[in-house]
Structures are given as C-alpha cells and as structure tokens.
Length: 266
Ligand SMILES: [Zn+2]
Image 1 (cartoon, helix red, strand yellow):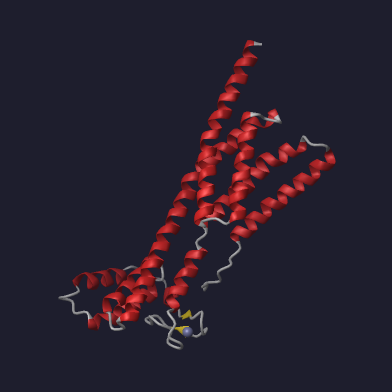
Image 2: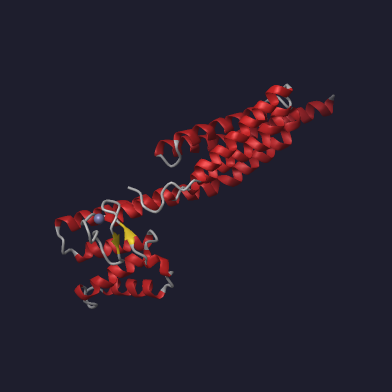
C-alpha cells in the first residue's frame, strides 16, 4: 500500500516534469507556425501530439505505456536543439535574401555601382551559389583596383582557394524566360531579369530541415505510442486507428521530404 502510493507519487512527479519540455515544444510549434517556418498542418499536428503526450504522462489511460511516454518525452528534448538550429539557419538565410534584394535595388538606381555588384557576389557565396559568386567577383576586379579595394581582392582570393565543385559553375536557368545563364551574369542575359534572386530564394525555400525534423518526430511518436495505445481498443477500432496512424505518419514524412523546389522557385 505504502509502496504503491510512493510509486504513484513518483509517476505523478515524472508526469509533471514531462510537461516542462512539452510546454517549451508546444510554444515553439506555435511560434514556428506564426513565423511560417513550418506550415499550419505540421504545426497543429505537432501541438496535438505534444498535448496527447502530456495527457498520457500525467493521467495514463493505458498504464503499460508509461515507459514509452518517458522515451517519447526524452526524444522531444533531444530533438529540440536540432530543430531550433535548423530554424535559426533558415532565418539567417532570409536575412541574406533581404541583403541580396537591397543590393539589386541600389544597382537599379546606379547600374555602374561596383560595390553593390560585389555585395551580390558576397551574399551569393554565403548562400552556397559559390561558382556564380566567384565569376561575378572576378568580372568586377578590373574596375576595382587593389589599392582601393584590398578587402575585396583578399576575399575573392580566399574564395578561389576553396575547392569548388564543377557543378557550382553550371549555368542557372532564368525563371522568367527559361534561358540559361553562364556564371558571371548578374541579370539574365536573355531578358534582363534578376534571376539570381529567384534562384537564391528557391534554395532557401528548399532548406526545410526544421519541418522535416518535426514531421519525423510526429511519425515517431505516432508509431511509438499510438500503435501500442490503439491495441487496448476493441479489435475493429484498434485496426482502424492503427491504419489511420500509419497513414498520418507516412503522409507527414512524405510531404516533408517531397522535393517541391526542383532548383528554381519564385
Ligand atoms: Zn530571363
């Protein structure tokens, strides 16, 4: 009797402790959904799964699942820093895109602005469009004497010394006219569009690591907790809910990992 009460107390304590990481996770899911880092469906699913886990931790409808709940909460704690890092990386890239757009704007006001052109090359290099960045910077050097632009010359030499794969120098298609542009063009050589902005944006939209991690987490919890929990239901309902959960898990993972960008996106 005494022991039972003690183990009940410790189970309740563990249940309450589980709410701390889950609350952080739920607030983060709300935040990521508002900022658009994850879509609304993934956000709501993430919040629902966390609420379900919290309920299961405090008031287990199926007591045998308690150890699995602890594992699920532990996985949530482990996932958190990785998802956060992925989201922060994406935000930094969005700032880079803003810088790129600003540099193009200053170029619109003064088409011979070599500094704006060099800024475009620098942002492109940071975003991983390295081959095109190097060629643009190289084309600017005759207009940028080394004694006035020492930093720029040093930066270009550093870029040239990094080993860049050949594929980074392959032409980029313009999303307006579909013409191919060899590295070194700031505007599309066929229609004059700022095709590199579209290309860089497509790459950032494609970097959906955070969303992939959240979807994988939802699938993992659904399989870990959902399927054993469903076994406790009457047989017909049990089969139905297991099939439903497998469907949700496979669907979420498929949607998150499907490549929708294809390299170029506006
Ligand atoms: Zn074009």
